[in-house]
Length: 95
Image (cartoon, rainbow, N blue to C red):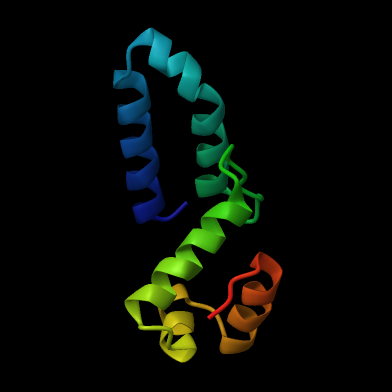
């Protein structure tokens, strides 16, 4: 583990162990998933957030911020224009 990863793990531990017991119970599952992802980045990280809805919202915001410019929106999202085009179709987003 590199130094930055160790610092991140320590910060995560500090936050988790400072929570009250009820909140700690709620966060336990997410804490361990995140810890596993940080220490082994090849682990698939899945949280109880609807990923497709989140991606759709991110695309809509990026397109709104770029006045519909797909090339700029793709840059903001960190994806290729082709990937953005496919996601527009997948999520039923019309320009």
